[in-house]
Length: 64
Length: 159
Length: 200
Image (cartoon, rainbow over the protein chains, first blue to last red):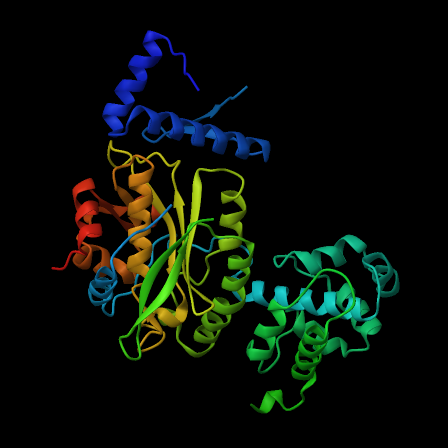
């Protein structure tokens, strides 16, 4: 499989790989796992929230 | 995934482990489930009991539901879902159909506490032997009779 | 499901016993866990004061595994020996650690069979179950590109093992997990662990 990424996406991928100390393939695979996990939970009727721990503000992450 | 380690690794590892406990996961104070594990085993065993007695009588779920005046969905849950809490009225109806003491059936279902009801060897062996359909095999028949015998044993309370 | 030949040590006479590490936790293993481990735990709970109960007595493996089987972000492992389930582990490959920048493989659940725990049975039936599961976690971490790094929240009774015996890095108490202490293996520590279990 060939992955076509824009320059910006490739930059982001390389940055994440450096930060997480993973190779690019591992980053892509982890992204896929996270996507599947979130998708599974949402199909179960659950919601994903992001919380600002300092201000205690919770906002819903909408996934279409 | 393959793990390839030499024999002496395990010898050293056992020495390393020593008398230490090894465990990782959720905090001990937080109850993660409304159904503690203690009753999962009880429900599993009760489900097996219902399943084998139903098969012994040659009944389908629907036929048993009619006789026990219970919902077929609930009977299916009793047989399949170890986290399902059976309704007392259903357990009573099943006791009538199976010719067992309602009190003992309530204990087996985890709805009543017996004075002494540890899951002993018979219960453990019984809970692991079950197939969904068909007549009972000699092994299943034996396991069922042995488990019912422990269920009805009036001397249990004196053990 | 892939099987690896491993060894356990019989507690009674310190002899090596052949065993199998499986890279899956399926329905049969779950049933074995519920029908063989739970009765022993139940017996301990009936006869011991609450502060002596196994720290994982309330764990719901069935619930955890029901999610694990629907995604590939989680992997189960178990050890089988002489027909019995001796240990089980659930790993999370999808968690985003907020404790450090480097990604780790997270050990979500790890438990040995109650008869293998010195706190319940002395001598334990088999030794080296827990440490072998840790080795499996490290190996999977390497295979998946995490370079051997793993993270876990230790049960209170197991801290000595991770800290003193394995030499894991103490990250500290985690307020999000009721202050359970969180540990990590660096890549270097993990490689050393597999090459030769650390001993301090």
